Length: 553
Ligand code: F6P
Image 1: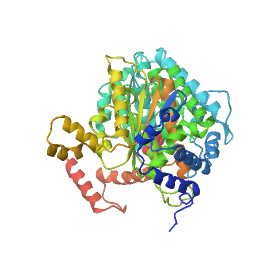
Image 2: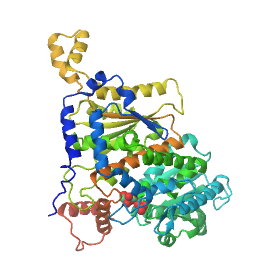
Image 3: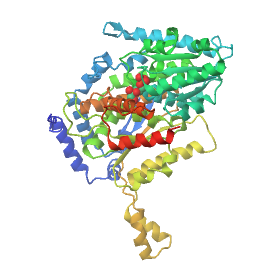
Image 4: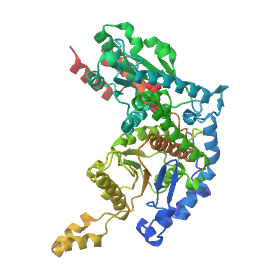
């Protein structure tokens, strides 16, 4: 039995935070606002085109200082430098995590393992540029000479969530005449519904898989290829309609994709950080290469902010340490991502993978079990829709829930007073989370509506909202390529910082691999093979039998 490593929780910095939490236990946030009229302006920081109001947190200067002391005691600045210079921060796979190099536009060099990664990145961006330009100016066409009108991106996890989010987010910048579709799930419905919308003569398929070994992606790609050949009657045309983005060129070639049609990936880019690489090709096709480069520039601006800004004013560091504060000192189990913008509706999905694959870990870098919690459940959805669903639990449930409200100051679509209404909803929710409603206020409200005293007493407890639920408000002037780039990079660095505090390998995902492997073993039995020596259990066996009887004949 490996003993847990208690060094972190017994450190003076951790214990100082335990004491801070105790002293704040009975001090509601509302009181902190009353006591300090400058609170909102003091707890407001900016960087890379984003602004953060973090005043609605259970926080004082003392606890903020103690959080930063904890960060320094974990050698955050050194670990950040190690990440950025390409050290092998993914210790279980022996790899760097160099997503920041993907958006370093300069003439810098970064030699890792004898390879100048920035030169390779720039060469790939130039290839993407040529390809995107040819598709958009119609010098590259489908097999009948017609311009491409539809792009079907086939990929899952990191090869799907980031590109889908950005494609949706940057619709105001879309290139005319190109529609982008995403197929991820191995569910016949998804690929069938997508193929029903497109025409073989004008559709470009992008097979997006770092490993080129993910069954969902390969099976969907086979279906697409078969459909394409059947509809076109032209197997040769596969070469001009199927492209791949992968680190496994051989596997792509075996699949039938011309090596000239393969864009590279590298093992130093993690799947969930890959949208900045050629995995972003559907995005580049959908918004044009200039806008794609602007997205990278926004992310790079956030990288610079993360690298150069003192911890106390550093957006990813402050947000990360607030997450540590609630997870490890206040018992929060979840953190909500609440974008108040239709264009950012897929942000919670992307951040779910980013954060939960990175921080869903149970041992530290030395392989010792953690004696503290690591990543919380990340969830959320677009406001104001959530207000009519799960916000009830935030306001009156029994759990502590922290949230990030994310909203642009200006909209791309000024319709009536909608944007003011949306903004009012956002501010109303964060204020309700913080201020709540006391029993006295509830009683006064009910009495004013003319109810009897008995009725007031009966109903008032149901109307009490305890408040004191923490939230951040993150703003940008508008949803643009630059601000979207900065926003996603902000959360990447937030996740990294938390991994440093918890001493995790934030860049592997061994848990995901087990489910994949067991699914592979079950698959042949669903398709008719007899039980092998593979260990199962009676529930699995019964459900396999049920599936087989429903699908026999
Ligand atoms: O879900 C697990 C995972 O390994 C992700 O990290 C990755 O983004 C996804 O599978 C897809 O992998 P690939 O790009 O290799 O097909």
